[in-house]
Image (cartoon, rainbow, N blue to C red):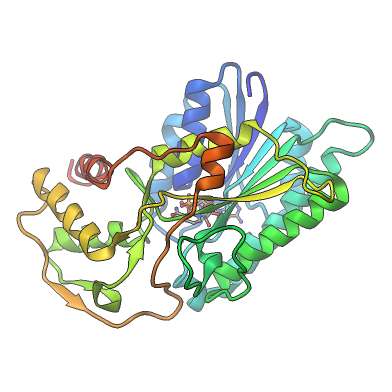
Amino acid sequence: MKEKTILVTGAAGFIGSNLIKRLLDTVSDVKVVGIDNMNDYYDVSLKEHRLQPLTENKNFVFVRGSIADQALVDGVFKEYAPDIVVNLAAQAGVRYSITNPEAYIESNLVGFFRILEACRHSREQGRKGVEHLVYASSSSVYGANKKVPYATTDQVDHPVSLYAATKKSNELMAYAYSKLYEIPVTGLRFFTVYGPAGRPDMAYFSFTNKLVKGEKIQIFNHGDMYRDFTYIDDIITGVVRVMEKIPKADEDGVRSHVYNIGNNKPESLLRFVEILEECLMKEHIIEKPAEKEFLPMQPGDVYQTYADVDELKSDFGFAPSTSLEEGLGRYARWYKEYYQK
Ligand SMILES: NC(=O)c1ccc[n+]([C@@H]2O[C@H](COP(=O)([O-])OP(=O)(O)OC[C@H]3O[C@@H](n4cnc5c(N)ncnc54)[C@H](O)[C@@H]3O)[C@@H](O)[C@H]2O)c1
């Protein structure tokens, strides 16, 4: 990726900001352009906190705006002519798609369509254009899948949330654009990613906030839920490796591929909370474990996420190495530094 121009959407997001940091730190003479609309789905100051150190790097340009804005997207592609595009901008979250469905259509469908169109036009009139589009999908596409581990060969036609439906749609849209306009595309189905400056809408973060306030925490499905938690640095290593290599053509000559990117080691929600409590106690953020309220399953939630990552291992040598104790320990130290200073 040396000397290339890379466009990352969702630049102030959890995964986007960490990806940009890694690119700026490790790739020589790289130019990174980041887009983010800085929406207030969660605390905007956290997005600013992630973005601020990046903006000090002369090889980084930040563009504030929405990927659903055609003029903005076309303008960015015209001005910077990216070689590689990583689309991470999206309205995330499963529960919020019940109360605010519009945001998902706007960012995940219209926004992704704008990116696809811009990639397509970048390659017209004999120009080299975008060499590889990598985009975020989600483990949510597996919906109520009972077979584990979840493999990309499983049928995923039964989404249990609008969020999941938009992510599955992204995979179909990407395939169609790849077939029609020969754009190499790789979709990544992320499984629960956690770490310092992570997303406050995710369970580990909201649990922490409640633990700090001494509030009771709610454990859904009576704790009988499993998540394939992956530490952010492991995820970023995987994403960078994927960006570097365009997918092989399938039997129809289409260069469109989807991978799971997760840990392949689901942990029960209850055990996860115990480790989190231990880490927070170690940092003296809390003094004792929280009182827990056990509740039934929530609409849109899935029982278990468990990634089959054999393909990512064999194609890219992907091997997450951070234990929950280590990863949550780093998160706890960040939390203390950020909120308690
Ligand atoms: N973190 C996870 O565990 C996880 C799991 C599955 C899938 N994903 C997917 O990975 C991607 C990145 O996730 P994340 O955890 O970093 O989420 P995030 O919410 O922290 O980051 C997304 C960023 O995109 C921005 N954004 C949203 N709509 C936009 C728009 N229309 N135009 C420009 N910017 C916009 C937001 O402001 C935010 O900063 C998302 O597509 C998400 O759906 C993440």
